[in-house]
Image (spheres, rainbow, N blue to C red):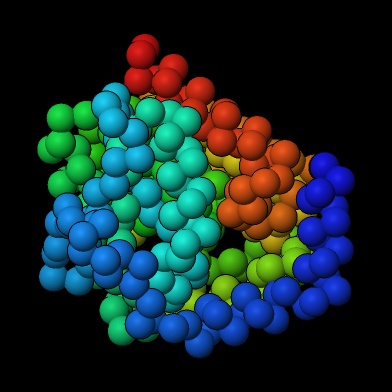
Length: 284
């Protein structure tokens, strides 16, 4: 882990950053809309409950990235997330399709999942190779969509994914103190809200290799994340899938969703690896 990341971790602990994150998850300001400037964001595909926002950070994109943002399904997309995905897309010479999905608790988990499928269906109709990039809670939505249409997606990137809504693994409790952002009880509460009312077929078991024939898959996370055991279970399952190739980058002592801090050396390495992944799969 870099000196800059270690210094940031100390700052998070000193300021009790987890408390701020918990508050934002449980009491989000859902009036925030970073895409309200229609002059700047003028290509928007709207559904009943969400929208796909098209952004072109490069002049002649050779691929497109469908992006699902983090925020525990409750927090609107923010500027840091937009900066992160724009940096990735620029490095990968890609168009961005932002999946600006509906949010809990005003919408049910089933609505979020349905929107994710609609967003992917819309995106793959565009004449560019499609990649899915998703972080934290957004990874759950993105992966579920890819599982439904794996042949339409050239590659998938998951950053600090949250893929298990139940979080009953007993090893999670011991890791909670090391995570400077995530609170296990808060995630369980929100995960329960997300899962409430889901019907068979709404949610596919992502820990069953039978469902993970998703093609090329790249995963990034920090080893000190609360969700590390869940990530490891998913990686084990994905490696057993008949049609999936899995590449994993773990950063020692890394924290949840670290690429949002764009100046970190770890972030720069991650952006470079994602761009290389997209370029290599696009040209394969």
